[in-house]
Image (cartoon, rainbow, N blue to C red; front, side):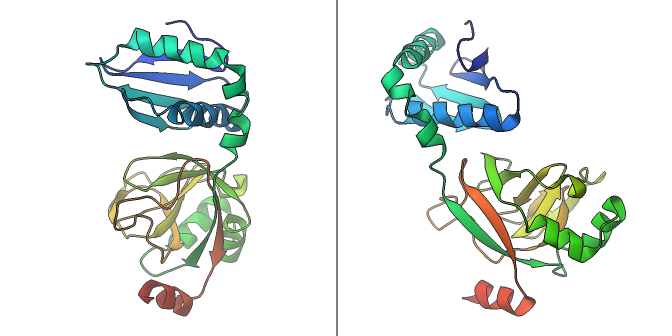
Length: 234
């Protein structure tokens, strides 16, 4: 299967899936193209398509192998790319993500690596908080755990590699950074990122729907311990 257009590589992923990689001089460009294709494919409501899962610069298409094969899927993609009226709408679709303001109790007792991040970056704890909450982050991918959204880009001054030894347990709602990424742990789980504080919001609702989705924009707003407790208990 030869690549074409925005797609720089097509890789089989077993008998019932293919992985598309997108071209782009930056991750933002590649991710935007990934989202554009995701929307275009999802809007077709294809009966044989099981999943359409975007990541930073790739899109996984999982299909019903009893109905179609990878060659059929490839021809569908070529046909879709040739439909200028459909594909011309992709840019608008890629910018349709929701905006979220996420409250954070920075320095919460159970999620506080501010001193460690300060040692690694040379920043004061307040400077770390100011830098992290000054950005608007884009959700590039959702994975690792249900509702775990990978967001970027963290200010360069805050870049910290993952912990050498991951924690066995990170508390639910922990707001964390690793390299150029930031994320919120939607549930208690192991993790190797540096923790900055706690978010009181549930990232997964009772129907297992994720609050943050690929393409959404996120800002973080510092709150006090009392505000955290009021929101957490509300």
